[in-house]
Image (cartoon, rainbow, N blue to C red; front, side, top):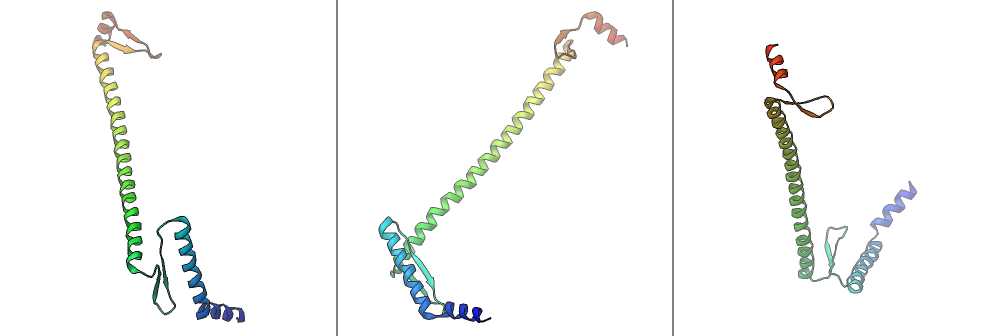
Length: 137
């Protein structure tokens, strides 16, 4: 219980908040300077106040807009990619069904013309006598 009270004091301590806030702002500034990237920090105080780095709100808005613009095309690209994949899957399915139907048509045409396949998959021409025997039965 005493340990819990110490943790509450530590997180609610304004001095601790101030030190952490300055450290985060400094790290953001270093990241921006050393890596030459646009970044910002938005910090909410325990009282609900917003503090930013850079202090200029226009610069913060510019970074946020850049981030938003960067994310939006990727979502659309992924969506378009998945739609194209679905179209390809449907196209593949239709093509396989078409092949099966064409094979069945070819089989039926050969069967009607007197060609049938034996058990070994070889096609033989049924003679006229065989056709007459089948017709009489």
